[in-house]
Image 1 (cartoon, rainbow, N blue to C red):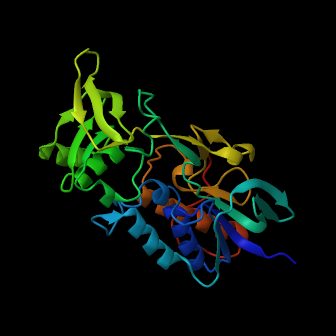
Image 2 (cartoon, rainbow, N blue to C red; image 1 turned 90 degrees about the vertical axis):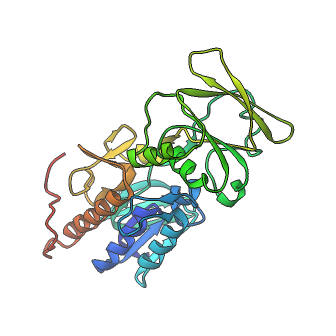
Image 3 (tube, rainbow, N blue to C red; image 1 turned 120 degrees about the horizontal axis):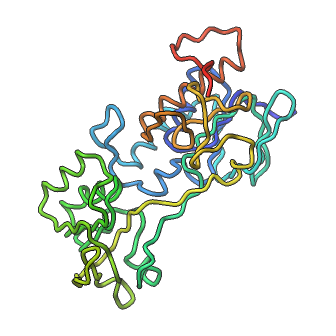
Length: 325
């Protein structure tokens, strides 16, 4: 007879891992399914060596360190972790849910979707030379930050990723930044730290062309709305203008989707009995995308699952999953 888990968590990023810990706390038989060959989700894929500043108890922690600590905290004896499995289907089977993956299927009485933003691809500028030098000086995320040390690095963007990378690299590289909007999209403290440095900042400026011979050697930049431009020597170009995302198969599961996210109530419940969502994949009025808030959301989701699975038990947490959408 196939094993039926109490709860199956889809997604092995920070939120999914903390959900696994909370499931252990609630003494649930839990299974975590991650589509990538390693834990960490988008944190491991996009910024394993970038510092994260908004997790309680850590003045700063790299993405890789955070995932390692969460894995140590979360993977307990009654938990099963399945890597390199992409969930493709969700259907009701008796009093459980069957999750179909590229490697088989799993049964769970409750499901918590913690799939982050879903499948993601970096947004591109479409400027001459960008495609030619992709992987040869043009990067969209950093796997080995030490590879940028001592280099001339041009960063493009004005959001949290661009500004955080600039602040991280300033002590180690010759950094220059261009942002094509008059306002920043990054947190104010990070922007203040950036302006306290002496790096050249072009705003609103844009990257127009990329040149080199086998590898990036120069970039043409200039102020937006002007024909003025200059060619600057660079070794690496880090383009941080966001990612396009796609929930993939999740869109076909009969869940309410708003703005590319699954709509939930304040107990992280979806309209499907026993199915919950937490972290970046979930949305509700007033939603803010922070890892720290995702931790709280997945804790609420697990507690709501306990109410669903064991209605006779009393849960001492103060939140309620009975509120409407």
